[in-house]
Image 1 (cartoon, rainbow, N blue to C red):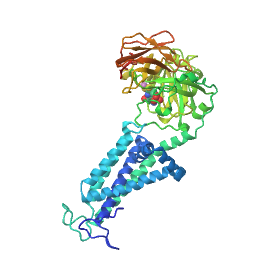
Image 2: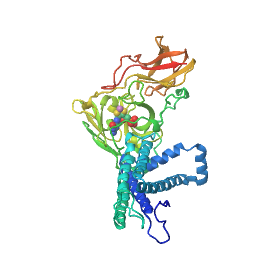
Image 3: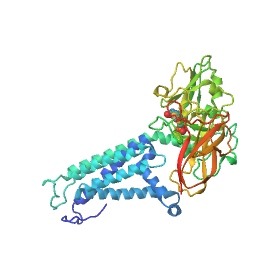
Image 4: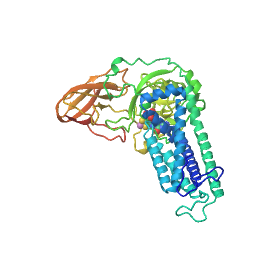
Length: 529
Ligand SMILES: Nc1nc2c(c(=O)[nH]1)N[C@H]1C(S)=C(S)[C@@H](COP(=O)(O)O)O[C@H]1N2
Ligand SMILES: [Mo]
């Protein structure tokens, strides 16, 4: 608590009544604490990591220089995180007390300071690398509640003994009993909100803990190793395998579904002779396969980043279907997620002997991250995600396109979504400083399940020049490309196009993503100095 002595107030001496500054500080602490508890409650619904306290802590960890981090670790060892959170707690407590005192003496500056810190916390949370816009919500709701409580409680702070009433305060000021009652009720409400937030986030924390304890079985059939030549080693170029943390995420779920493996099962049903259900343990006991597949979103604009490549571990969907024995006339598998999302995939594609469609449980050597479908999802080489890559999948219904519609079909997207041949320029980045001379152009190109056979680059109205193409494990992934260009000063347009293994050349006609995927050449403007 602060020990301010206000002008005109009697300094507190010994056993006298605490003066109003202390009550105001208490009001600040209780109002702020209740607001933080409400923020925790909102965060429990949005994402546990969107808690303003955790997000601010994470931002501090990212911002402190390496030497300070090393120093903290050498001083506090593994307790460094507890020390950091403790420090944030002490600073918050002191700040909250200050806000209370300020609000009493210089209204509305206490409330204004609190609001400013809350908005800052919302921005910090919203800018976390893994954040969605929703991450700003906990801090915004929390600070709204805190400001309202602060104003209400400070207005009820009893006057210091012997002090003249503050400007604007009624002559017969608020009484001490009333203040304590309101403060107590607020504190109790805050504790209830905190308990509720713990209860709500218990499910996701439990799922998180189970996920971390899982040791996935080794594949019965391992993926071919990634050849060294798959990486061209160009700075700023998308890596051949996309790390899970930077893998694009697209789904309709406002809150990431939390599905515990022990509660999960997958049912194969519909037009089949032998419907069946497998549990998580059943699935892990099957011979799993590993396969690199580049996933792409139909919403990806030309040059966009809604595409990524990962090593998936899972069980062939083909074998699940064989066990269920689809009936004649069926032509679609409607896969359904716990959150109600559905995708419709051509049955014959899932049955192809040489197409590795997986019921995946692993992504780049670890269990699927929750936002990528933990515990199980589908991955189908060659089809956009919206018609194939159902996350948190629990049902495969064998059916007919004539009888069933998947989630996106009545919303303006094609029932069938083969990935279109495409390519992208990653390097240079817009705004890069480019002196004349050799400029490296580089990017990626994909034609899942057919394979990319060539990439060409055109500068201004010049000829198309073949780029160097990196190695790949096979036709189901993208390939890096690069070309060293002898750049002359001035403004230039650089375009890229790919050719697939069947000899199809990427088309120049520009089409928007809807209804079945964008087309056109990725073209960038470069200014050479
Ligand atoms: N349950 C569920 N699965 C889903 C979706 C969804 O909205 N809900 N979106 C699909 C779409 S449109 C794409 S592009 C891929 C994206 O997978 P990712 O988020 O792992 O990159 O998931 C697919 N699976
Ligand atoms: Mo998508």
